[in-house]
Image (cartoon, rainbow, N blue to C red; front, side, top):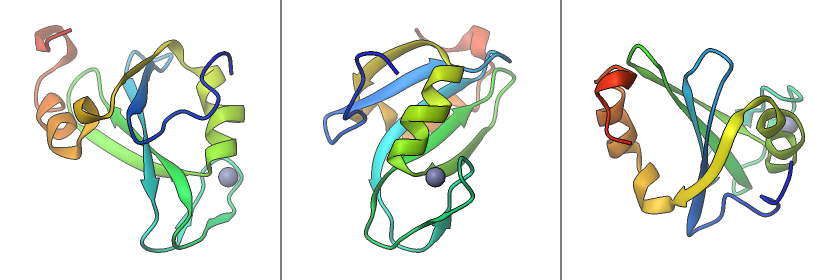
Length: 109
Ligand SMILES: [Zn+2]
């Protein structure tokens, strides 16, 4: 992790790319039920400030996972390339699902 400590937050999300070329959007969230973190396989408690990782696939489609904030910072972000912060409003679920309806070559930006 380099320079993104404390992100994502309310104002900023992060976007990077997996080695397969899929987009990975990291979005700050508060859990409303129990989730299991793919980083450590531990539980994320209800009410916890954590990170939703929304993948927008290169060929189209989306999928998301809930991660502990620390696990996302220590495990996930280092595996992504070209990580940059983006305004949280750009990473709403509706926008990302709409984005996933087009293959990468036909998306804006
Ligand atoms: Zn974890």
